[in-house]
Structure formats: C-alpha cells, structure tokens
Amino acid sequence: MALDEMKYQFSELDKHIRAYVNDSLEYTQLKGFKYSMVLITYVVKVLVVAILSLLALFVFSLYLAFTISENMGGNYQGFLIVGSVYILLGVVFYAMRHKLNKPLLRIFSSHYFDRK
Image (cartoon, rainbow, N blue to C red):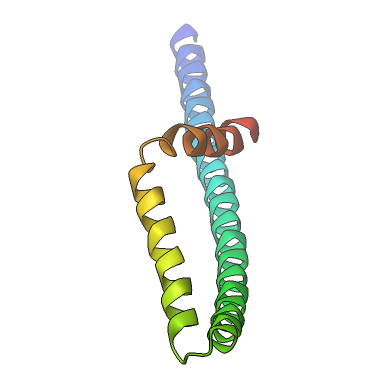
C-alpha cells in the first residue's frame, strides 16, 4: 500500500515538473518574442524617420546648391560648397566617432533595460 502511494506521489511530482518546464519554456519564448518585436518596431521607426530626414536633407541641399550657384553667377560653385560642407561634417563625425559610443550606449541601454 505504501509503495503504491509513493508511486502515485512520484508520478504526480513528475507531472508537475513537466508542466513547470513546459510553462517556463513557453514564458521564455513569449518574452523573447516580445523583445524581438520591440526591437523590430524600434528599428522600423528609426529607419522611416531616417529615410524621410535624408530625403528632406537631399531636397534642401539641392535647393541650397542651386541658390548659391545662382548668387555666385556660376554653374557649379554651389554644389562644390555644399559638397565640401558635407565632407567637412563627415570628417568631424569620423574624428569624434569614439566620443559617440558612450551616449549611444546609454540611450540604447535605457530603452532595453527600462522595458518590462
């Protein structure tokens, strides 16, 4: 009798352990899905804003280059000036690339660790 009762308790224990493991796996999968969806939606939003901003910057650059060329009386001076400004900005950002790591890490870590 006692042996049958122990077998029953062990089988119940086995069922509970299996249920716990299955529930833990499902929870982990759901949590992973949640974080991946947060990441994907964040990336999509950033890409949309970046593409629209670059398009606006491109149109504004063309306008500025044509205006400068028109005011200087030449055909290409405005494009040369606007291009030079972009090259100068690129060099400055390249020189400061190591200083951008800490603020970017702080921004992205706050987004990642503050969400629950």
